[in-house]
Length: 287
Ligand code: AMP
Figure: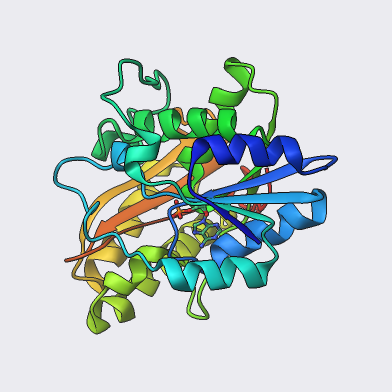
């Protein structure tokens, strides 16, 4: 595995390595099975796989956890190598942003809901860094986890509407045995919070059951999820939303593909989770 830290070296490497297609997995590191599921699919579908590890300051708000975000370069390098990554791109903040940015992406649609509403500017930061990474790495396929479904929807629009010559692939959320979605941030949960955190997915499964049972009114389902989360966790509920997907529009009755999403703020970690469902409650796993 080649480790690369500069943009110049990265663009040269891409030119130098012979390949049919490049599969790209963008991450913020502290790698876990969720990331590796994307790598596996990228390896299946491409002959060159590039991963980036970059904790992007642009997508963190002033009171968010940029400093506390877990990092472990040595462990990540080891995991990436074992996973069969061909090129690991690990630039510094200075390398990516050597000067104050005169130009940034502004995401116009789909940011007034879910994490976009709670984290103003977050998706502009995501859009900006991915624009840079897509230009530097020139992938044919970019793999994203549906755990971050809003990110997937926004990146999909970015690529389609601004004509990036690549395809975005969305893959299912990988979970711990008790259902908690794997996340780098899970290490920042206290023991008690870790025990409570499984309730996020449990509440989503309960919501799915209500839909399967024929409840089509999103307000009724949201109220039930809220009751369950309030009873079973001490975290602060940031949002519980049911929206059309991938448009992320408000709906008054469930009759199309939807996302049911929750975000809960624990002491040191904000956790998000979602499920994507057909109108009849059937789960959607890949987009
Ligand atoms: P992150 O390092 O958290 O920015 O995540 C990098 C990529 O991995 C994103 O496309 C995430 O959606 C994806 N990812 C993170 N956690 C999971 C998970 N539990 N299952 C599947 N994909 C995930």
